[in-house]
Amino acid sequence: MSSPSKASGIVMALFAAIFWGLSGTCAQYLFEQKAIEPGWLVSWRLLLAGSILVVFAITRKDSDAFRIWKHPMDALSLLLFSILGMVAVQYTYFYSIHLSNAATATVLQYIGPLFVVAFYAIKHRRWPVLIEYASLLLALGGTFLLVTHGSLDKMVITEAALFWGILSAFTLAFYTIQPVQLLRKYSAATVTGWGMFIGGIIFSIFTKPWQVQGVWDAGTWLAFGYIILFGSVIAFYIFLRSVIIIGAPTASLLCCVEPLAAAAVAVLWLKVPFGGMDWLGTLFVLITIVLLTLGTKKEAA
Image (cartoon, rainbow, N blue to C red; front, side):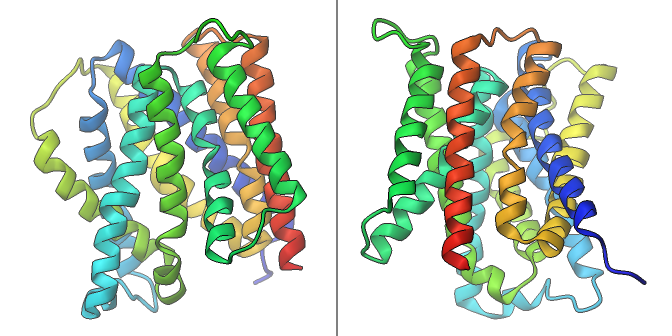
């Protein structure tokens, strides 16, 4: 059997990003039009997607799905990832959508890689290089345009929406950094599957997902099913496949399509007002990710 082509890896990374972007818009639809609460939706997303990924990990040829629980320190690290990584990044993102919209929340979350760079700069005791300073200025400028539309007199989103959006970026950084050691020992399906499933069980104590809420019709089921299947399981799987084929830096760079997809669909489907300043702010944040990714590739080389 011939190995997958680079083009197929690029296509998979792009579709993963689009699927993730559309899941944010589906979440906004459920919050605004179907009276679904963010915490309730996060619980079911983690439980259902996590259980599917755990089953997938168990059925792999060289399964390591249960080996991770035989090492106490790895199990403890996984528990930490479940709560402060998986639950935190999902809830802060969805709650940010609830307070603003899918487009703004997704762009704000994409500031997260800047915090990752800052963490490693502190860890390795080195000053940021020029490209990282440029990324910082662009990220700040993009956030400023999204939040104020260029005016110092007013904010176009609430302070709460800004707070949860930035918090979402912080949790994304933690989610990226914390499980690195686990991912060097176990498959991504095992770490992510258990992280979702355990996180969903713990979070359910507070959200009581067994108490059905909202308006359930065909639109609700379609949006909910999309978030679980396409926005979680399939997106995760094809993104991992793309990383194997084209490498993590390139795959991560292509994921810049996610905020564009979220913004475009939110504008076209949910009629979210997204003006010139919003698009310019989005562009600044995307350039930030491009610069950071290219800098990472150059350093690796």
